[in-house]
Image (cartoon, rainbow, N blue to C red; front, top):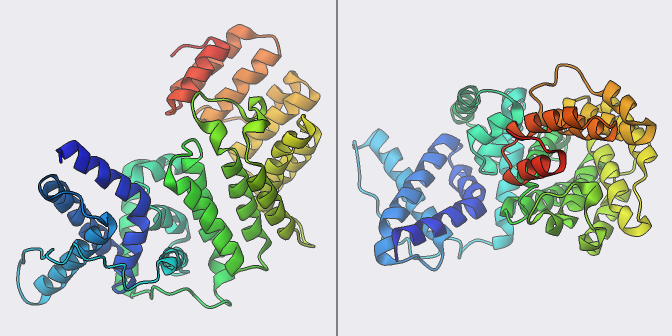
Length: 397
């Protein structure tokens, strides 16, 4: 086997199983940093061993065994000796054989709720889950939170140190404690969906929907959990439309959407209904429900979307909600009204410039639309989106 082949298998395994492996490694120690370091060592060993010996039948099991051996060496070195060679003689044995495979996702769920522990700084709980449990890099998380990568990395290091030093137990809290931790867990699952939505081939895109449904089933009386389950399922229903060139949601062919997943999402949304005012994820799921209903009606109910986005802006104000509302207002009340509704101080927010380009084009101001599209393209890291902006509006940059 060539080095590139071994590297490709290692990369696929990392994308598919990183979070599960970290959860298993950290479950007995409470030390997330050590679990991540041990797994990194195992991947390094794989890249030097697999080209000669071949990829094992169970790459995840091989990596878990080597990482556990590395953990043991660290424990021994701290108490007995300065160093020890890794022993991977048993790495060909499947360490998952004695485990119920269905229990492995529960380990991830346990770790999600552990990272939402009240003693951990609220500001870092969701980023910690995105990195330690779901396997995103600090730089990706930093981009999502609009902070410098070094600052996010430092926050994560401090959080892991606190978990290790305080010996937070890696167990699912009882039913009384789970609702308190639920918002951060839902934010992490939503973040996973948001970071992977443009790549339906990414295994984490499906994992986000799976985790959302699992959490909702665990806490069946929590409307926001069912709201997120509905939201992520609706997003999955349009996965096939996200292959190839970028196509805006309103221009996609609804015949390409998965009818069964749409029906599943609608069922979750019905379970999310409650006597009280809707929360953020219930509203976002309702917005997606309006869009997917185009498969049945052939049209977008823009007035309903305006009502929902107005509610979302009140419940969960954010730049994204304000920009989306302005775009919808532009459809209902005209492009000039939409431009007036765009938020101020959003010059560094890519969706702002994309929405502005569309509104300017609808207002009959193509040169300004092209300029706004060029800015949106410069702020995007998605080549498909960049190509779309330049082709539709004639922007360059």
